[in-house]
Amino acid sequence: MDIRREIDATHRRLGTRELEAGTARVVTLSRRYPTDVEDLWAACTDPARLARWFLPVHGDLHVGGRYQLEGQAGGTITACEAPHALDATWEYDGDVSWIELRLSPDGDGARLDLTHVFHPDDEHWPRYGPAATGMGWDLGLVGLAWHLDDGGTPHGESEEWAASPEGAAFLTAVGEAWVPVSIADGLDPDDAKARADRTIAFFTGAG
View 1 (spheres, rainbow, N blue to C red):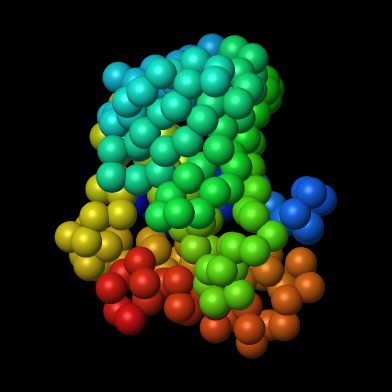
View 2 (cartoon, rainbow, N blue to C red; view 1 turned 180 degrees about the vertical axis):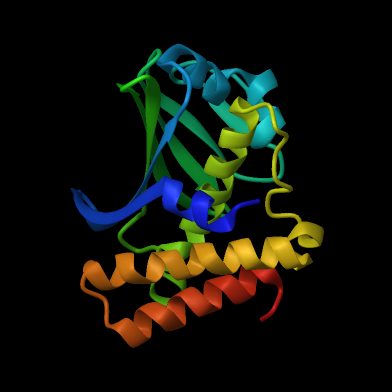
């Protein structure tokens, strides 16, 4: 893995959104892929392909239906406009948040914008910051790139891979990549670094 290339291939940004419950934190990751929108959509929505680079998914995969990622989150598909947009709830360990996928042409390739909207009362944000979810999505976007390139997939968030030198180096680099993003969003630099360090330690098993 060329860690620097993979880190730089993804653009990360933070924002807010007003919900009835209050002001929600918004994390967005964007990456361009060397394929067309239709193929990128199939990679993100076809259960057989999704299982090859992300996780197996089960359920009623249509608007209003519920999905379940094996060993991870589940939720309800709330909107779908193939091959450009997919919205769903993201329900895990009693918490509810929301994800949005947007696909668009980008030169001779296709662009994926993945947005994760957190509930205003999310209890993990003050301790871990955006890297807590960004880390997992960063891994997913790298896995998608390798899938589209037919070069295999990383080992995701498995303990074995995270403990390997390459896995730990990549996870550390991802966590550190979220620090300037947090600072640009207004977070104190020391706090931004501390949150990222806690996230890195969690993912690599160092803490």
